[in-house]
Length: 109
Image 1 (cartoon, helix red, strand yellow):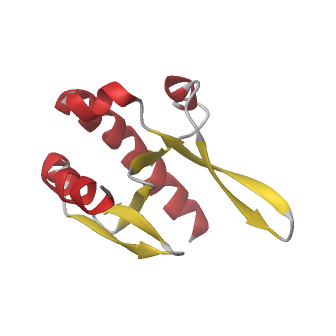
Image 2 (cartoon, rainbow, N blue to C red; image 1 turned 90 degrees about the vertical axis):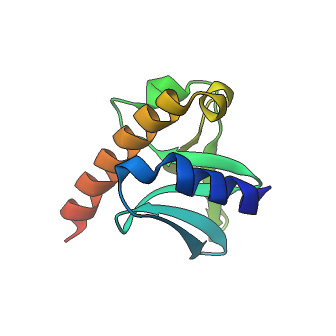
């Protein structure tokens, strides 16, 4: 399902810019204009969130990983089920995630 989802996302998110999906840290990362905006894990899309947008993902899983025996919770949240079937909703969520990722990328520089 991950490959099919990646292909669908490339088409669905194309209005936002150059969309690419590639392996990162053993998972599939979704980039818009070379800015990591999401992850595909077990056939599900997770998008970057911040304090202003995380509420829209209430009840959805966060991407977590283990680091030295501690669980690290990231800002990536599983996209609500309805977004897959609603192109405008998916674009709205992706635009917000892209903006957040862009701000985060600038801070790191």
